[in-house]
Amino acid sequence: MLSSCKLIGGFLYLFAHKMKLFPTKIVIKRISLWLNGIPEITIQTMAEDIFKAKLENSIYKEVLNEIEIHRKNNAVLIILSSSLSAFCELFKKKLDFHHAFSTNMESKKGILTGKTSGEFCLGDEKLKRLREFCFQNKFNVDEVYFYSDSIDDLPTLEAIGHPICINPDKRLTYIAKKNQWPIRIWTN
Image (cartoon, rainbow, N blue to C red):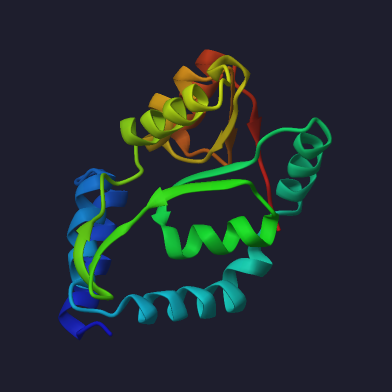
């Protein structure tokens, strides 16, 4: 699906992102342009194949334990992710969650345009979607448990009642310790 040039470019973007040269949103926006002209069904099929081959079996057992605790407390379970909806919907189904909010790609007549339908579900947008959901369903954000492994989720981590950092990098570890947020190290 990708030319050698785009594949190399993708690695360079990811490397630059890891080196903190590009913000996450810029990297995602540039790479998502590569989806222009690809049929939606191709992405859906690819997501299903990747999910079955790699992702489904990589779910931390600790995640299942946490979900069970929240389920016993009658919590509304939500996936809130910057990932493409094709992947998030598969996790939603597998984990039996109530809702999934993620990045949706724009499509015209079943063909992706390379643009998002709405904003990327990242940073402030993720918090906006969570607040809207809480408002519409009469939930208090102070009662929300939010699990994250990304500094990009800082707006949401700071706004909710129960932030939990999973396998955080150095920057997120520092902030979590400073704010006395729980840090959990999960492994497979």
